[in-house]
Length: 49
Image (cartoon, rainbow, N blue to C red):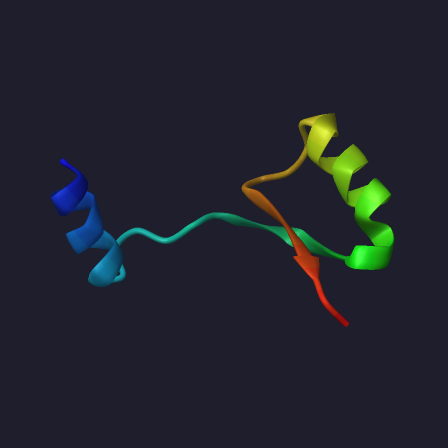
């Protein structure tokens, strides 16, 4: 099964769902609150600026 999933990822048929909001490391507390709120659609991203 893992081999099949790997093939799908390599073919671009499966991609991670990333939320529209991105947070800087300075906003890590806000990002954590957002993640805990249950509102994110996918992964919460921290950016290094």
